[in-house]
Length: 527
Image (cartoon, rainbow, N blue to C red; front, top):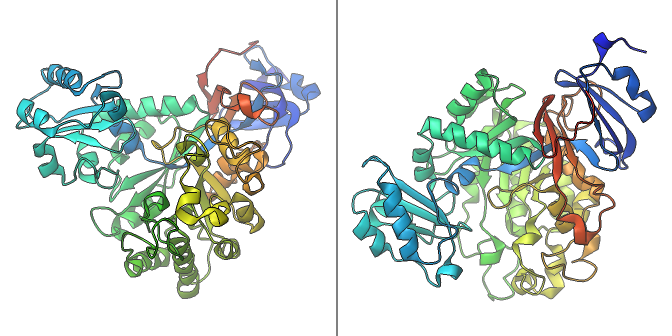
């Protein structure tokens, strides 16, 4: 029996502990001292780690798992979807305009006016820019709708930020996002709110993507230096307004290798989206004969950028959706190995919407990581309304989101959300990627369920595989003695929850670096 001077700060006891090292959960306990896991064992062994100050959580059949790593996040997207006036409850554009006019009275004349959350279906029409021009002739006004598909803007904003209301992707808004990041105190508040939201989802680590240079870095550095950075941030650069900035990458690589704030390399867009025929395809679209892509892809420029980054030891993620784009991405990363020499590069391809099985096999052989959005089916209200069979034909529909072939090829799959496309939800990801169901529960038995990910593999994608992709597998990503105490607890056993109840599951406790950062029910039973 250990003395109380060796007692744990926190002891978690559960019948369902998923370590991410094995496929099956086990009954046992986890002891935490400071920021590390110091013991894992059977429930009979827990008492030796108890002391008068120990917080003990008796969790029954609630699932305990490693903290979640979201491997594809845009904080700036979250920021821009929550900055300014909340218009989500407005029913007309006139009502929204009145709220904007009132809010503007509290702003300095030099400040932009922001709003978010309006819904075209509720309003019954797209809003008129003339109304904003008349009310605000001199300051930029940008009001994004609830699903990021349209920005209500005045002409001043269009002229200044060089994008149009109907072409307002995050990349298109890069100039605007950089301006929004200059209000450091506001950004700090928003980032801490963002972290609290993620903690309520069990997230303890993210890979965040910034455009051109990482304008968020001063805020994160300040929080880190103050010991107030609530989660681990791995960041990458995506060239949008300028070519790939190798000098910035090399400087970040040298200066940001901390376990809480870590530079990881670059993200480069390859093609567009299969749903709107901008994904690059090997065969013509079924619903658009003769067309393989509505936009041009400069593969030569992408290849040159990736080769140069790889030559300097910098990691790259290529975002590719169509099978032609995925094939080219694999070939580019294969060329890196051939030209620059083999190394433990841990390059990745993200999205991987419509891969060819031959290229998945190549990815496995080349040790290329996959970054998938495991909640992606939930973008479609139902199987009947889904676009997949329409754009490629019913005979090829099964090739979308082919996780089984990825696993068979030995690919390390990581999970992300493209947040704010989705908010991180492990239960939703099980529903969509394991059960293979659309939001309305269709189709019966799941959509090509044989192509899905088993629950254990999906939880590994959210945990140990994400840690490995960030070169952190020796420090986090699994429940093992000596690793950081990054842990998430759900309110039920997700392995045994029915599909009908999965999406009701919630996180009840999140521990990041040994600190309790979220406790929904104050479930500690003893101290």
